[in-house]
Length: 560
Ligand SMILES: [Zn+2]
Ligand SMILES: [Zn+2]
Image (cartoon, rainbow, N blue to C red):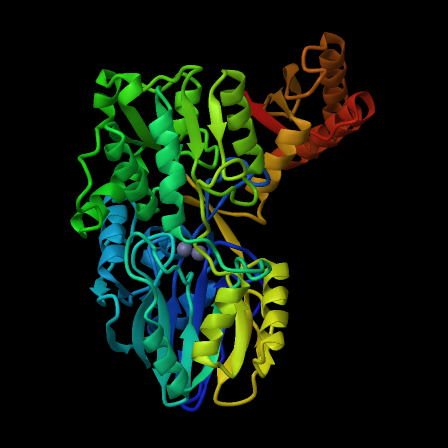
């Protein structure tokens, strides 16, 4: 248990409070709480992904003990869009709240599929309420409006939260793309109307707030991608995020124009395909080849879109590069296009995968060498433009690491926003109806999900894993009779230690352990814990001296 505060203040009738349980000070795991008139709603409930610091952990969710304590004061979970860092936590956490999930039809369809696929998990019976993109309705203590914005997934929304305490805008993830390929450009008249109504505060996307200029349009990729597909006479594989339906449209159209077939490889791509098709986002495209049709398609006619742009070992592209995929092979004349960005933390895994492909002779194309990717987040000129329409009095940067949040706040001041504040996960802020200030701090944390089981990232399991990875493991078995006399020689084994096969060392360890046990009083020898402690310290001493390492130690005491 933690000793931090778990209870949020009760928001008054005249104010809007805000606290993030994830997403402030990091890119990922977004979860914001907005409070008004004694009630709260959550905006987004995302995940982040494990890295080399979290061995065995693929998915990380926010610690939501604060939400547990809210009970029925939490009236809604509102999802801005169907990216994992905004929606991915719901299947893991839905057993912890009773309120409905509100989202647009695309996100709802995606969420239903996820809950079905992960049906073994508890909490699958979450109530989903659809709000059409552009729609408005009462959600908890707020009058909510979802205003569609271009991004890198269909149906991303800027959320207007209205209450008697004022209008607060949560931008979500956005860009001002004049030609987003899927969906429409932002409705600037609608955004300007919010500005006229009066925006008390904006909580804004900081991902690209350190970048000058305007993020390039999705439509600008059509020609460079078409050229790659047209000019290659062998297979062309694209790795991209499965949620990037616009990119899938661009690639599929270019393939059709070049007289080639296009297939999808990977489970998450097929899941998104089904959702997007059901919601009408794949209209006018040729049918996508199933995985079992790929081998029958001549290499010169094949374009394949694959999962695994981040170098994930179990995703399609990694398995293809390893020659482990059932339906598709790769050879040196092929081309692999990384139509994606490197998510921070994944650079090494991506580099390893690209090195492997290059070593095979494959032509690897990335956004460093060709125009094959654009960001879904706004750079400074777009932020200036949006805030020019909304005219917010206050700015709280979100969706960024510390440097992004501070850079965004500073930029906000430069372009004339009166009050800016930087807050991190757990900081309770008053956004409207009183001073713009921090009211305290509540407990936040990160919980790893390991095969469906929650593991505290600050707890023993992860500490042991990291230690085993660095220092190895030492295991000792001690056999005692009921009087506490040694009944058989102790046995030691080492794993992940340089001296693991050193017979002399093992014998020295076994003798030292016998000595340590014999030195114990008769009474202590009947106590398993005392025996384990004595053996552990003897073992630690020898290993320290002989190997310089501190392996994870495991002592078993057997009574015969
Ligand atoms: Zn997003
Ligand atoms: Zn995001």
